Amino acid sequence: MKRIKTLYTYMAGQRLNLILSVISVAAATYFMIQIPFVIRFSIDSVIGIQNPDSSRSIVKLLLNLNELEYYKTNLWLLGILIISVTALRGFFLFTKGHYSATASEQIAKNLRERMYKHIQALPYEYHVKAETGDLIQRCTSDVDTIRRFIGSQFVEIGGVFFLIGMIIYSMLSMHVLMTLASIFILPFAGYFSIVFFKRINKIFTKVDEQEGKLSTMIQENLSGVRVVRAFGRQKHELERFNKENDDYSDKVYSLIKEFARFWSSQDLIVLTQTGIMIFVGTVLAVKGQITLGTFVAFATLAGYILWPVRTLGRILSEMSKSFVSVDRIEEVLNTATEYETVGEVLDLDGDIEFKDLSFHYESSDRDILTEINLKIKKGETLAILGPTGAGKSTLVHLLTRFYEPTKGSIQINGHDISGVDKHHLRHHVALILQEPFLFAKSLSENIKIAKLEASEHQIIEAAEVAQIHENIMEFDKGYETLVGEKGVSLSGGQKQRVAIARKLITDAPVLIFDDSLSAVDTETDAAIRARLNAHSSELTTIIISHRIATLSEADHIIVIEDGKITQEGNHESLLNQEGLYKTVWKIQDADALKKIS
Ligand SMILES: Nc1ncnc2c1ncn2[C@@H]1O[C@H](COP(=O)(O)OP(=O)(O)OP(=O)(O)O)[C@@H](O)[C@H]1O
Ligand SMILES: [Mg+2]
Image 1 (tube, rainbow, N blue to C red):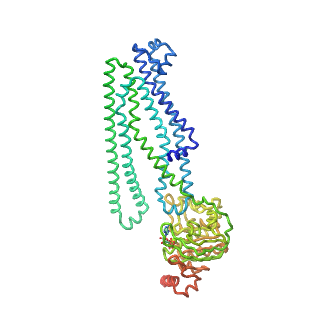
Image 2: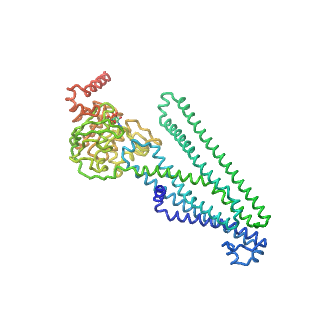
Image 3: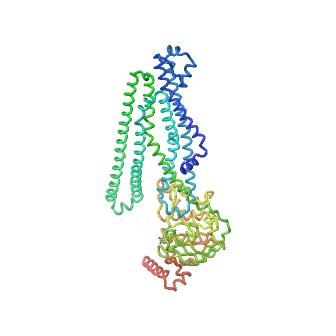
């Protein structure tokens, strides 16, 4: 019931179209049902000598228009009438299709739009956990299931019951025993159809799952093609693929077999029913209990009813599929977005302070950061060193409110950031991620993604500071070069520098490099930092790096180990202490010396 309500809310704005389409179905059905009665009238009363059954509205109408005698000499009129009624039915089927397609397409479009907008606003945490493939499926095939449901089954369900009702009513009005002879086995066909489609749905799910497995495997192999080649794993991967592919084939084959069995048993039921009807009809006609026209009318009506009964199961199973899709879509739409609690827009131009901050991820109780106390003055450069997994990225993710601290707080310019609007905060604190992601757009579009109104001059300036301008100019199309599948593939270091340019352009007063210079050589790394310092002395910078050369020039250096700050100072003072900083320095210094000698 709840799902029907939800479906009803999806229909907002398109309800008139849907109502028109339901009316069209009813009209088409009504006209279809008239045909057997025109036939009966023609056979029995116009060609034969029976009294016309004027309780039927269509017969009454015909007799009001002309005398019975007139039709006897102008039989062609009735032929024209049958053609016209059929054409009218066709017209209403067309309007039904038109209105329901318009409505369902618009509903699907709105739904996709709503989902996309909502997904954009979901918290970072949600996206870290969510499977991209699954989310894509919810936005595409689940929405499509609903589109199909509203576009056809929704109208069909009403139509089918209306049709079955009308046919049975029309049959009963002619002859009760004949009615029974024409339909009594059909409920079994309907029942089997429902049972079958319920069962087949399970097989469909298995086929879908297997298809998913197969496409994941293809996708993995395509994106990991270098690894596969480098390790000479082609043969192994091929075997793995063949196994899944065979599995998929088997499942599809069993599906086809099930369908073949179903349709042939349905044919058996339906043909048996037709046989019984013909037998009883012939006997009754010979005995004079029904007229020839009635017999033909029954045969025609029985023909109409077979198809809807046989597909009853399909319609109902599509309905249950669309309910599953409603659930999957609602699950996404009901997840709270991160901007729902709009915070204040405060002046963030000032010092940053971490106060007694502790943090653990929802998935485990283990503290990733414990009792962090740290002050970063405005305009200062803070450098962070620490082993992998120590919690460095987590620390800066807390500063941009990807996550909220479990204990303690972070203040900027004296304001606790938990009350600050996230958009505003992230405009102020620009984080360059450890693994940059570039869109399949031109380089200039990638750079100005956070500031669409940026001028060409600003783009070039940012690229120059990030030491990527010259690289870009080497490409034939310069800044208009496409990135990704259809364009150039950039090296890791080039990508990182484009990502840096992209952040520089926003003019955010706080800039965080989360190991974002790791793929850049030492000289370029130094050049970027020198340009940055010259660019703005107001800029507060946080640099996470494993490279002492990068860290050593910072005003303030901290070492994080296992979620705690274990060392703090500047390059000189840290070299005078035993600890991780000195150890790493010794190793890297020895390496540097080796390279020189
Ligand atoms: N979303 C998450 N859910 C649960 N645990 C996480 C999540 N992200 C990171 N962790 C865990 O938190 C710890 C710290 O991770 P973090 O990414 O902050 O390390 P890091 O210091 O940045 O390491 P690296 O130098 O390798 O980038 C790790 O043990 C990691 O497994
Ligand atoms: Mg990290």
